[in-house]
Length: 80
Image (cartoon, rainbow, N blue to C red):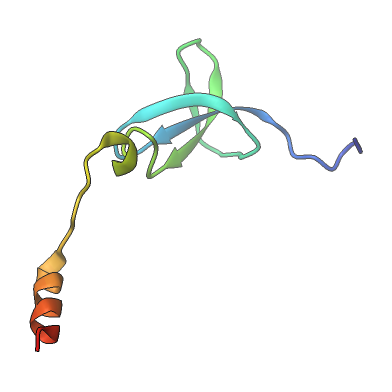
């Protein structure tokens, strides 16, 4: 492998902001934020909006969001 062309592969913490789930793994992503992990070391913190602890596919909780009756208006418009 050529030296100097690969990104740094290091330990990082991913945090799901909706469920406060955290996981320590390895990645090439970087962040200015850090968090102290259970082992006492500080790692870069990457915040994500969806993870396996909050995604409906993994939790089994499908959510149907009908904001302001869009589905009803669609059905009313095209039921002719």
